[in-house]
Length: 287
Image 1 (cartoon, rainbow, N blue to C red):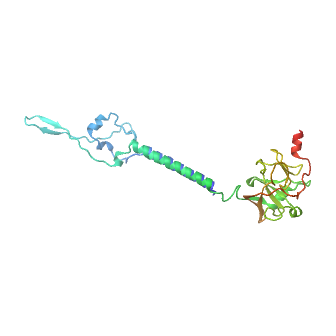
Image 2 (cartoon, one colour):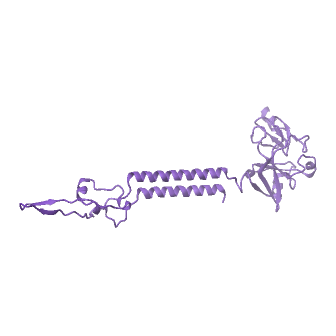
Image 3 (cartoon, rainbow, N blue to C red):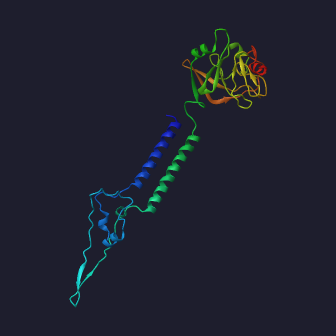
């Protein structure tokens, strides 16, 4: 599982726990066996006209709750008159019995919200700074079997159409041994089994460079930079050759290492002929 997938999973868990916490706080109830009204004074019940609790569900119709009433103790005075004296008894109850106050609810909700926000931010920053370790651009990309790639590149009429690898953002093209010997890339790991991988981005201003089948090269429509089949500079404002990647043959499969973008200066000479036909940019201009 990649770091992005782990980040999304952690984000979902934190969000779920936050929602559960808020729901538990809002709907929190005392034990069903606990009757809070028994702990209240009769006078207080009379003054509380609503006699309801925001955190306690309403009683179904037909059911009532018993309230222990304080019995007034009679006092016989000297003249024989009977006087009733009401005694108010205060009993200390626990926080669980008292329930949750509005201040406590808001405090807990604020803490949970802040904790969830901090967790989400931490996961986002972790995903931003943590480099990709496998899969996708920036890592080693398996382009497929080398023989299949070659059969895709070479056409029946002798022309070449590069194999585009979306995950690597690269064109795979052929470079025979004769051209490789005369190329500035004769040493290094940018050539394997007669194949090279060229970055799709123009080195001038970053436009994606399309392939021109008629000229057998790359021609940037943005500002007219042109490169031959293996990305060597030919014309235009581009300051250097097209960038490329290291490639390797791993058990008969072409692996492109997109973790390192290799730059190279303009080639002193073209190791592959260009153009081999009409320019696509010129054709577009004439129309």
